[in-house]
Image (cartoon, rainbow, N blue to C red; front, side, top):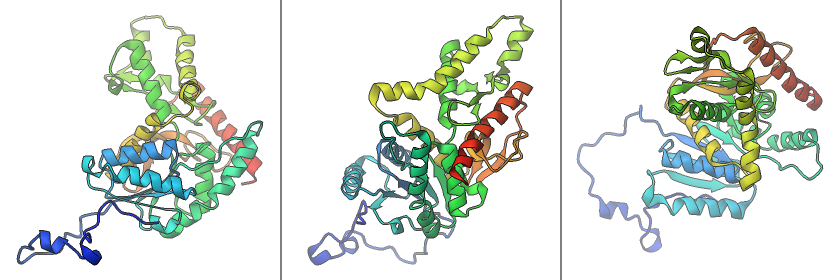
Amino acid sequence: MHHSASASSLGPGGLDLSQAFFKPIQNTASPSSTKRHTKVSVIGVGNVGMAIAQTILTQDLADELALIDAKADKLRGEMLDLQHAAAFLPRTKIVASVDYAVTVGSDLCIVTAGARQNPGESRLNLLQRNVALFSHIIPPLAKYSPDSILLIVSNPVDVLTYVSWKMSGFPSNRVIGSGTNLDSSRFRFLIADHLDVNAQDVQAYIVGEHGDSSVALWSSISIGGVPVLSFLEKQQIAYEKETLENIHKAVVESAYEVISLKGYTSWAIGYSVANLARSLLRDQRKIHPVSVLAKGFYGIDGGDVFLSLPTQLGRGGVLGVTNIHLTDEEMERLRESAKTILEVQSQLGM
């Protein structure tokens, strides 16, 4: 099932009408070899996958978008629904198939597919089912797009990013998890709301596990270039540590709140992942808190582990990890977060 957003053979018997509509100019040259054709593949067309696909289309981040899912009817329906909006979107070729061959030559492969937790099922059993699912996803992606960047969104994202790295055989700079990029956006929103400023003027990171053991880097928060905590101390303005902890707790619980209200999260993660895609595909070299191979950074050891650190992203994937100063408490919490993820990985026997 391969369908594109446009076709010029609309005449009788598939006659190519493009020659009738357009008269070629003389002495033309072939397109510049520097002009890149950007292709993005999204694996999984559930609520999250389609929010990502829709945002990528509206932000004009790809020349071609490939959709993959195991459910053929749902997949074709989503593809047609997007194609029918062609008149309102930047020109993008949209294809879809249950066959991973459709992803060939992708610059970026975004994986959102994942098994849903059954009633009474343990988190470990769910994870084992997702690992089994990934064994049918990651190797074909690596086969058809050996030079692509893998961006993992499926949860638990840190462990599944590690699994994807192992299964793909890719260098670590080309395997990234969406990690705490969205958590950090929620964090910035809550701080901005608390202080009545624009969230874009707040620089703040959540690092570590995308989950309960995540770490809020309060010591490095700044607003308009002003370090917040050191400013409060210099001005002898009292603040309660409990207030800070409550903001972090609200970040951790915010996804659960959205899920309890509407059944799933989609739009925020769609914008978050599209934001990462832009930095990667357009070589923006922006800093994002994403899940990367963290061994050797900030004293993290004990094994290969992926967790979120402030990371510079560009066309080559991970370009480097930012050397942010952490307090001793933040450093210890980050190491504990790494241990939490490593314990889960050890249960998988990986």
